Length: 85
Image (tube, rainbow, N blue to C red; front, side, top):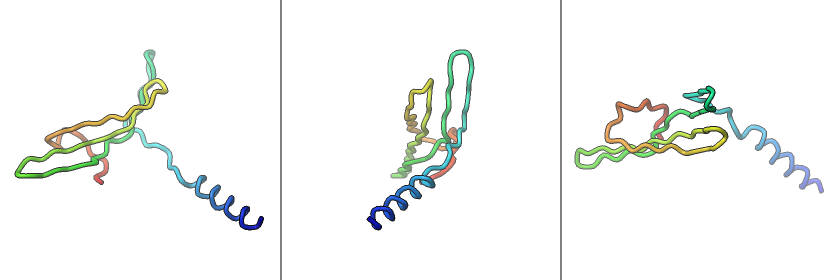
């Protein structure tokens, strides 16, 4: 019984501190609806034989419908990069 209480407290403490609040780069509300989007992150970069390709992702919520935005680009300058993984 003592182990069960200890394990329960450990899981509850992990759950309480596991998530940070989202930082939105766009938060638009108008008469049509709501749109929220997180910062754009570079997930993948390929540089082979002088050709460079990038893949970017961001999460968006449009009228309570979550979506994953993906962008493939050959240049990095057009997209504002927040973090590179």
